Length: 420
Image: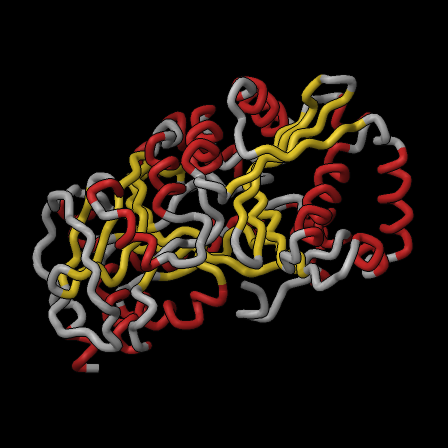
């Protein structure tokens, strides 16, 4: 415990200048105290230093630089790093926004939240400093791969304390870690409990294992009714032509319009945290350096859908999809996109596909399992924080999501750590 307390002896935060890359070897342990530094932009950290902490991740320095350039309205992106001397050993993107505490309320409670937002906005809208990004589905905290478990825990403590210090300096009352999966929660929960954080469930991640040699074997893993349904839908989609590209030059406006059309047809709205600006698609595709692909579907030459995905060694992250209506229903474009991405993975020997959040009922029928995910949060005022801990469960997104409610106890959740 004394060693963990020493982890909190970080120096006061300040805005740091650009740091050159440090090319030393990873150490197995760390020398205390560690230093947490806030960076107004990720570009103040050397690309190779950042990527050393996120090795193998498609959501790397270039991805977060693109997200920062194309930050959604109401979101200010930045970063934090933890240093042992001048060596970066941990880092995470940050975002700042004004969050509606009643965002996840549905049913009879939603009109109450809307009334409070109109008449007493200060009660339901609160500035928040978040670890993560609105444009990721998993909380991205990177560590030097050579750290021991104890050293990583020390680095994590220092990172959290650094975020708390910056929030205090900026008078931001609420701190959150967005989309912590159950695998990370296994070791994060104890340190965060010790800092006064509590957690609520948020939207889980759908994950599809693909240990199949071909499409026929994948289809054979599904129920007979699902196989029959897919075959019927694909026969009705014979006019759809598929193309894979690594660039959206010349079609950026069409891509953005299709995304907005699909967003307008969704069941739920998550405000600024669900807002994807038009420039996001352009910036990600231009900066991905081969880690991104866009699947395009056309009917009679007209673009009717797209699916942007990030490619890792053994996993595809399906990020965003957009479809034209009513063509989406007429040509079963959801299933066309799904099967095209499954084929993409199988042809390349990729054994995991992560099709993200929402549409859980359909994804469960298509063979997906769900990774639990959480938001950890605290109010910096120790007198107010107990009320957040008491009423926080009312803000749980997973309890309000219609598909999860319908699935109920039959929702196919994975055991922690069962998927990458």
